[in-house]
Length: 265
Image 1: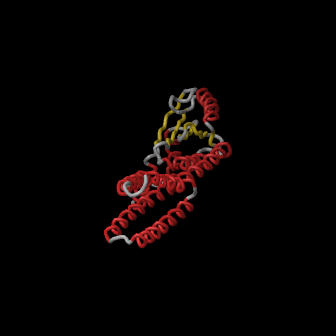
Image 2: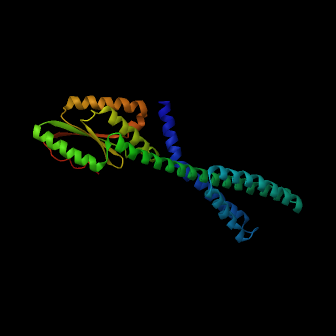
């Protein structure tokens, strides 16, 4: 229960962290401009755009370097100006307040750049996993959609001729969190291949996030046995709240020579 709650909170934070950082960044920028537009030329505000660009063009480590340099550098710059111009306590207080807002703005900007860099890294990782999944599909028995359709047509024709029954079982992962769909597809595909009857049942990737098993020559008891084996393996890998978002459907096959409508999408 505690692990599921932590996973839920982590998922919520992953969805909210960019909007929250963006709001802080925009609000502090507006307040800084309103508080300083009479003191500095408008052209100086292009510095904000240059700073933002520097944060986003590099890696997370480079963005952190910019963050530290700007934080320390602005502190020393303000101290030099304050001593040079003999600021009054009121001026010093205003400068401290504006500098605090600038640091909040800077931290929000750094956070945004960090999250964007994470997304870039995760997208690269997912691309590599997709390529691995494509290799898995061809090497480990999980068929592509076209190959699944071709083999299923032959199997269904043979089942109809022999008057056999079977089942089409589908697992739809489209409601899983966006960042975990691809890796979950790989894991579930591996489990389906392992727990199905080798060289007898076929497994296919029939949608972007949908896996389908054709169980030939089996009844409801056989379907239950296969489902139990698969669910047991899935529970070893996935949390309960993830399993609840996997949609399972089972369709009985008897006499059909074509896949039911909606199996392939």
